[in-house]
Image (cartoon, rainbow, N blue to C red):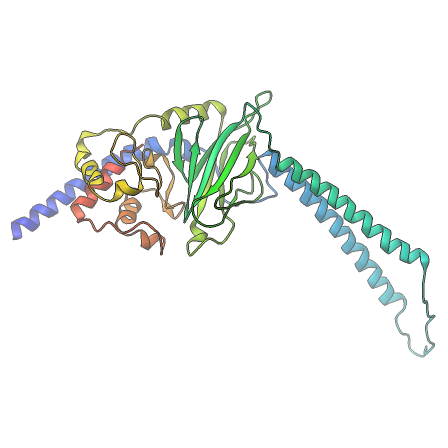
Length: 354
């Protein structure tokens, strides 16, 4: 019994050494582009990097300016009246009683109508610009499906499928690269929102909504689901990674490659293919073709796991497989109930999926 325990301990230790070595290589290659891009950690509609977001900011400044002007005028008139017509000691005269003024009544009728008309026209113009339904031929088409609680991202014209990280090309002078997003839901109502790229758009079951973005600045920009969709709504995060056009094409080429085959972790691949994992996930080159969970073909090219619930590290990946509920209580992925040695082997194989 003692020898069996010692042998098991040695095997586990050896597996973790191999796991760490594979992880080092996977981290260095899989996260190279994401790590190089600066992360804008504070989503803000006032720091746009895309044409639609710039239109929204301009409209916001107009509304804030008009509202602020109204506030200043009304407050100034109020304080003037309070000071000018205040009661003075020894003056008990009744003030003049004014029962009507055509000039004043015309003013407070016409001026608000003009203000509302200006705001209506400006808002209608912006909405029409953001909801343009004609997709130009040079546009990149992306289908995004909201799930509880993660984002499925498909590039139908490129043959690429990923999850929770939206990769986009930046537009440059003379070379526009707009991206049109077709938004769908697999379950409940979600809301897609990356403030620096565009406004919120609802993601509704049995309906396809359209929005577009055209970033001109590279980097990583954070977004999230903006419609309460269940217990883990707050952890339904996403990242938009904007590349230079050449870098985006290189990313697409890498994503179209089949899953890496490493003989040293073949046992982990066999465990994956013999468990319920294959019913929910897809890995190109294996018998896994599930559609309920994220495509794992290039899992280690992503920065986070669980739609932003935790960084994509070997320790977090192993812990996620063992107990997803620890990161996301109520997550639909079940705990796999694997023995420690099988869990180590499975994790070691997943770490090779770059």
